[in-house]
Amino acid sequence: MFSEKEIQKIRNQFPILKERVYSNPLVYMDNAATTQKPLKVIQASQDYYNTMNSNVHRGLHYLSHKATFYVEKVREKLQKFIHARYSSEIIFTKGTTESINLVASSMDPFLKKGDEVIISCIEHHSNFVPWQVLCKKKGAILKIISIYENGFLKLKDFEFLISKKTKIVSISHISNVLGIINPIKNIIKKSHEYGALVLIDGAQAPSNLDLDVQDLNVDFYVFSAHKMYGPTGIGILYGKKKILEKLHPYQFGGEMIKNVSFNQTTYSDLPFKFEAGTPNIEGIIVWGFAIDFVKEIGISNIQSYKKNLLIYAVKRLSLIDGIQLYGKSNDFSKKSGIISFNLNKLHCFDVGSILDRLGIAVRTGHLCAQPLMEFFKVPGMIRISFSIYNTFKEIDYLFEGLLKAKKILLK
Ligand code: 7TS
Image (tube, rainbow, N blue to C red; front, side, top):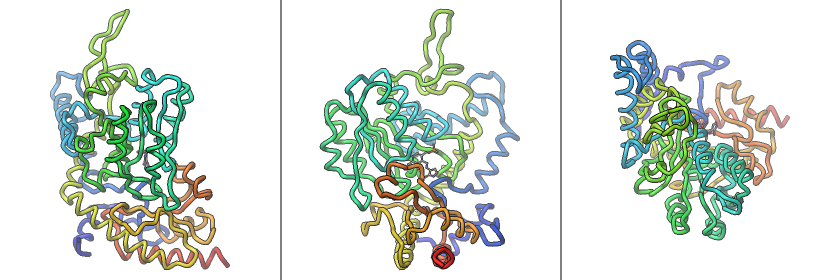
């Protein structure tokens, strides 16, 4: 457990935390949307342009070699970070959304009428819409695992839905709304028994959980840099080599080809087959510094600190009369630092606006999970999500802010 002093030292590495919002100190609790960036990440971005800006994998010259070297170093760093077998299993994309679209689009030729795809009703739109569109296009059937009132997946439902017709199961590791950590290892094992592939949307996981894609035996795992202290516009698709080799390229152009003639084109080997065009070179290199930041603090330390914040926040918020917490569980080992709630049937935007005036940044609305809002029969929710730089005092300040919001709005 970190002391207050240690957390303050970590906070000092984040220049933005010194910002004031309407004359109040910034209390940033929208980390599930994106985390703030430490100084070493911000500086790395400038250093990249000062010392190595050039295109990668194509130049003979010094700078191109230098940039290529560092891009490939980060690929290896990511390989180690998620314990992949080969670095060529790491495909750089724009982020989680593009990674899922890549897989959905590359699966197209392998899906036929009557085949089935399984997702769940808690999925972010990024892991919902690509499968819905693909199934409609191919005449395949989209099956959706439901949840209990407490937000946990109905695994019995899953066992009922999975069959030999299931071609792929695509489920989030951690819900961006409920913060529930799904039992993905069981889901992967069961899916494989039926010959289905599994994609895990890990957008909310990388700085929360130790990842081992080989131990999980997952076929595809996707996430973005910007939710783990890295830059926006960069993420990865991890895929098992033998599966990626069978999939068709997602986009066509420079770098993904072996040979182009007037009549036909042959494609590069992995990972380049899936990396058409100039990648986000700066984003990749800077991401490496964010990974170092996470590793220096230690994922298990981040995890246990955030768990303590979560437990404290749930205890405090539960004291508010008229609060409705979603995804509540006494088993905190199945939860990450995300809490979504509503207050006395007040509109989430009204509550969010008052919190904003107090300097507290929260997410409000459907949280990119409209089917889940439909399940709970609400137009939206208020969501707080923690990071390593949040404090117990900030939770107290939020608590007071919510009482203030109630007082103003229920007048
Ligand atoms: N999947 C999950 C579970 C997510 O939480 C998000 C982003 C995505 C996919 C998409 O990630 P992207 O990096 O491609 O945008 N979640 C959120 C959120 O909860 N609030 O803003 C973005």
